Length: 356
Image (tube, rainbow, N blue to C red; front, side):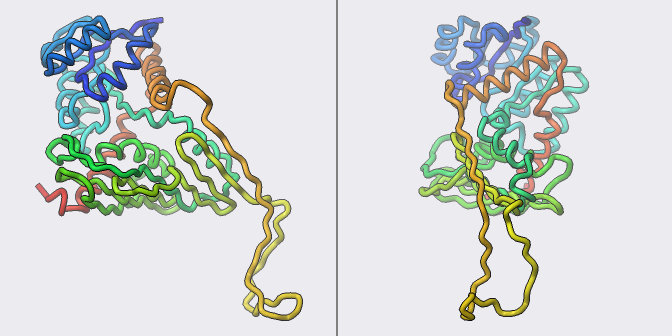
């Protein structure tokens, strides 16, 4: 099995706790050769933990011939410029989310990858979340009928005060958390066309100038309505997924999926009536429909945690792509649609994102 030699840009919560933590264990497929971080203590820790080299700036890695993949886990505002620079220099790049804040920047990255013949991958690992895959499976089975609406809630209650609360740092809930549920939502809506976008943003508990409450509606002819919330002021959060269908529904959190649908074989045939309804005794009756409900559920198998499960699936896919030429399962073109939605959301909320 070919071992991919990796350099990680950044040793923060993503660079170390997600990418470094996973790649340092998947030694049959990956080897961390170098990291770049401006903080000396993080460089020293990386050398100790990975047995790799450590440099202070990403630029010090340019020109090296012993690197097969650059993992861009730097600050969000550096995702686009650093990814572009390494693609143009002839390196494969895996970029953390958010890839960018403008579709024009995504287009430049796609063009740079095509020109250099290198791979541009984006770490949208939540596509591989077991609960999401089960939700997709149930919807695709058709047992819920036509899907009318899908409500997605990535909510909680927090008072955030770090750099990711600042618009200048590409912060805010939509760019911080949003790429995960948005990637899932657009898979369910369909990536073949842009949805109609309606978005409201508020500042609630944040100590920065970016939004921490987002309500987003995606709609389109013949597509389910997607109702997406990403809020930091929701103390009583409901299910992660709530799916509305013409034959039943589904609810899900990250560990359990439950769905119910009525038995079409035992459901009585109905027809529209405009005359008053009565009970057997002749008194007025409310319109009723006795249905036999079928209930099913799924629970996430015991394993080593959601993050490790998603990372393993993503990095397995990426390894196949880089070593065997298999197509990427999460493409830059799909992520471009996501960034187009984000760009429109920001345009609709000039009180937070004034026009340039």
